Image (tube, rainbow, N blue to C red):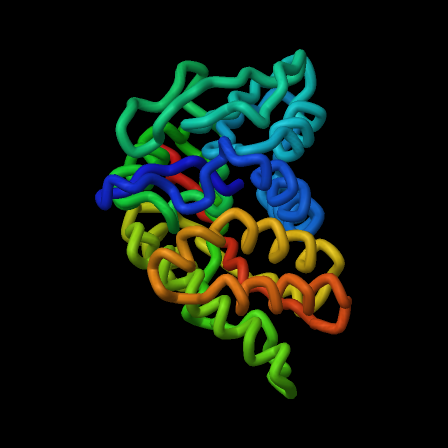
Length: 271
């Protein structure tokens, strides 16, 4: 899930988990992407007794699913720099943790390590990836899921009117803010190669691309509210443009899409 990552700019992660809109974003992201994520867990065979590490969990839905699947003989640890949106659960452990700066949490080696919308925002993403690979048991699976905003940059792919053009302009401003904070907007497409270069085998990948959904609308509205001040200060949008965009969203006439979520998975070779 989207985490409260830090970057080299010193400004912190653009979509700070401590803001009120973060809860709305986590809910919308869960609605949009949990079914795809859980399908990938089924693909790699998550089962009873597995030890799992959910990196940058954000909210509880993914570790909840894993805890139910691995049962009482398994173990799930959910980590994030900011754990304020993760309730304590009998099913999994919650730990404040920085994947790029700290050693893997206790409980490994792990049968499954998963991160969604995490590494794209992490300045030291290569270091974080190596840390996760080292924390796998032989035969264990790493599942990484990250967006690729450069691959499909439009929030309104069908740009047929001024409302859609404005929405796409807002999205360009948002991408620029992400870029300024160290996000790699082409990271998703790199995942299969990076997993192979890290020594994993049986690497596969696919992509999910929601074109329109009520959850896309909730996500966009929460995101715009969350980054409004940054857009204005950076000269990427005016208050009037943001107000018009929010009104267009509320009117319900925009088909809002997301960047492709590319999911890649690979297995650490047996010793």
